[in-house]
Amino acid sequence: MADTWNLPEHPRLRDGDVLLRRHTAADLDAIVEQARDADSVRFTTVPTPYGRADAEGFVAGLGAAWERGEVAGWAVETGGRFAGSVDLRWREAGWAEIGFGLAPWARGRGVMTCAVRLALAWGFSDLGLAGVHWQAVVGNNASWRVAEKCGFRREGEVRGLLVHRGERLDGWIGSLLAGELAR
Image (cartoon, rainbow, N blue to C red):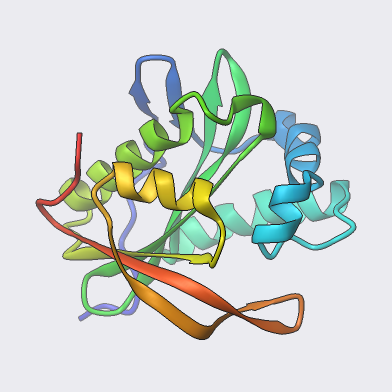
């Protein structure tokens, strides 16, 4: 089994007004704004304080990880505007882990659910994934709602699952097998 994916040229994926595309330099200010949001700081591992150099490093790092076959990641665009990010991170034996984050102005409208479905459908069809794991800090109900709408089964709560700013936090973990993606 390979240690990474042999990823194709970066695809653009669309469903209605939601577009998944490569991140660009034009996204940097919006990435900074999203990363400074209180929920992003609370529930993700973005550096804090988060500045433009962090956003530049994120975009460059994501591009390099795509080239190495480690991460398939996209900018989420809706209404012609950067709204967030979604990625599939390579794991052993045909599995991936999904990660996602959305700007406050785009939340509660189904944008991330649509984006996650697009990424998952592509991962299952084009990468031949056997399954995908989802993890979140206990209490991140918005992340769970997206995962649940996509068909993930929450397998449980794991003590000390996630490291967040040097502290171990309890986390939820879920899984989705090929053929279980909800529409």
